[in-house]
Amino acid sequence: MASAPGTDTPARRPRPKRGEGQWALGYREPLNANEQSKKDDNPLNVRARIENIYSVRGFESIDPGDMRGRFRWWGLYTQRKPGIDGGKTATLEPEELDDKYFMLRVRIDGGQLNLEQLRTVADLSVEYGRDSADLTDRQNVQYHWIDIRDVPTIWNRLEAVGLSTQEACGDCPRVILGSPVAGVSEDEIIDGTPAVEAIESQFIGDKEFSNLPRKYKTAISGHPGHDVVPQINDIAFAGAVHPEHGPGFDLWVGGGLSTNPMLAQRLGAWVPLDEVPEVWKAVTSVFRDYGYRRLRTRARLKFLIADWGVEKFREVLETEYLGRTLVDLDAPEAPETPADHVGVFRQKDGKFFVGAAPTVGRISGTLLHQVADIVEAHGSDRVRTTPMQKLLVLDVEEDKVESLVAALAGIGLDARPSQWRRNTMACTGIEYCKLAIVNTKDRAKDLIGELEQRVPELDTPITVNVNGCPNSCARIQTADIGLKGMLVMDEDGNQVEGFQVHLGGALGLEAGFGRKLRAHKVIGDHLPDYIEKLSRTYLEQRADAESFARWVARADEEVLR
Image (cartoon, rainbow, N blue to C red; front, side, top):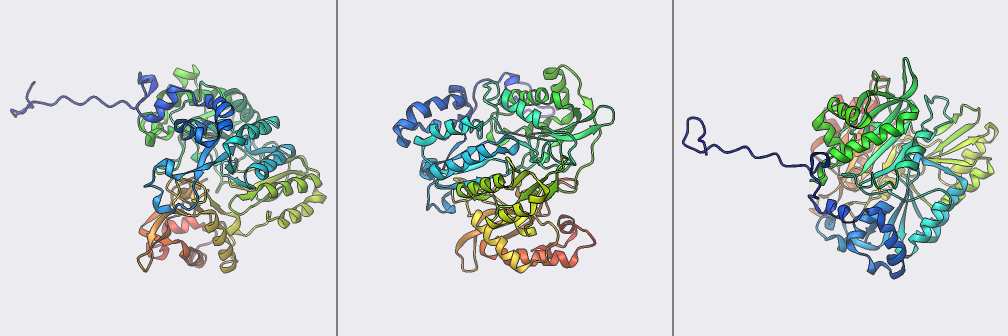
């Protein structure tokens, strides 16, 4: 072996770069247990075992590899066993955390439901889910307390009305976010519904895309208000007008939060409506073939984009997958903040849609039945779920609007909510989630009630997002006040529920992640005091029309503590 220059020490050969498990580079052998499981059996095949074995023989018959892996491709996660505190989340084995009941996620692509579908979702909640139902920030409805013996019946009844749980979870294309006001908004640039429907019908359940490196989130909206939060999706098509070609979509790639948050980046390309499915397929194929599979922590599209850059990504997309060049597009105007559609708005056909706010997405089958009755009584057949955990009613005649608003308010769905209720979001939390450390839904509900009493004068949005663990299902990094659950010590040295605070995050025109205050954590029971003080200080110090995020950016750290 040759010596290093100027020494007698043998020169070391450079280590070959370790493979990331990219299929396109020849790494076809699985490099971890998750990849091995998917190679052993395509996860979509687990449905047959659920129908023919597990639902017949019960929970104890379920193979662990299916239960903690492949079940996700059909929307199933085991829920957290009751009574296990947050301090044990990271120390217990999966089988010690597992309850014998499941969370089941119903995918609602584009958030679109008719009354027959809504009533079916409600019926199943009441009959099989102990009346549980949550509206998620992915436009899904999520059940709890599901017995494996009931799953085939639930599937059959959902599918009879055009709904499904297929690929609602797993390393696959999850529910497609779509504008909840697609086709009706007066402000809409283009209706993306045909593209949502085409992708869902052509590619969901297609084994060509059922083994991606990790989960894959899609958003399509022709509304100018970024109402599907395109900046935090793996792939997003945001409505945009090309100066020569007219209405179409601006293509974004590589967004995602969790423990390594990254905002999606524009490819600088315009896509017409009829080409969206083809371009979606091509981008998804790049991720499938070049995405990192060795480490789960780097298996999202955002890491490939970060390493390649958008120029190389677009080049590979065009040359290897599309076989043509995309049309260039300069950056279109972005909204100040994403639209949530809460309130009363005129549709382009002269009717109205009404957006109402449940409390942090927590609803029930009983409530959904009441919603269906109210909607039907007011002459509509269409409701929408939203990426903000809200519920919309479409097609309301003008003379029925106020009656509808009052009826919804009577069951706890407020179309004119306080700023606190309108802008607070929470993930599932320790009540059901095996990853969670703290309670979120109840904590957020109580927080809203306190702040409505303490700071009723709040006249501008302050988003408060409450998350039970670091994974950011409730988008803590992009909230004005993001709260990440953890265990902290109180004044007496006891370990209690608390939160790390992120301040000043935003989506839209000035998108960015909130600042973490060094060593600053808040005990859960102290949250009302802390947020009251923080919001009052903002109201006192803000300049004209200054947003909370802008104020945080210039405020002294001591003021924010």
